[in-house]
Length: 142
Image (cartoon, rainbow, N blue to C red; front, side):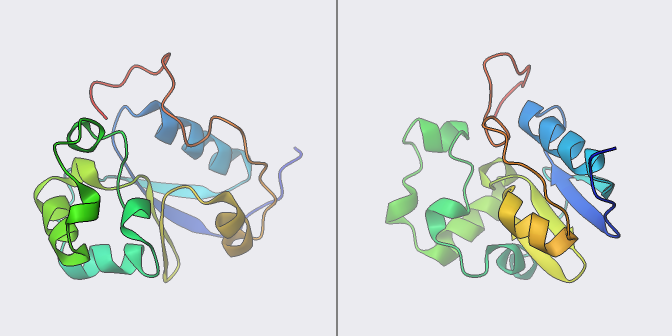
C-alpha cells in the first residue's frame, strides 16, 4: 500500500449520489482515513454550525457553484450579505459547497487537499478531477 496510515476519522457530509463526493471518499479511504458519512442535504443545520465550516472564507468559496439557482444566475451571491447567504443555505442546503468535513475539532468546507493532508498527516495527490462534476457522473441535480 503506497498510502500512509491516517489516525483520524473524518465526518464527511455529502450529497448522496454525487460522483465528485464518491471520488473524494475513495481517495481518503485509499490513504487510510476512516469516514463517517452523513447526508449534507438532510442534516438539520444551524447557522452556528455552518459558520464553523465557513470561518475565514469568502462568500464564493462557501457556495456550490454548480447549484441550479447559482449556475442560472437566479441567486446572485455577490448581491447577498454573508448573513443572507447563510440564511439561503439553511433553507436550501444544495447551495452549500461540498463536502463539509469534520476533522477532530476542525471544520473544512470543500475538498481542500493541502489542508486535509496537514490535518490528517497524509500526502494525498491532487487529482485534476477531484473537485469537478464530470459529464460521466450520474447526478440527479447539483
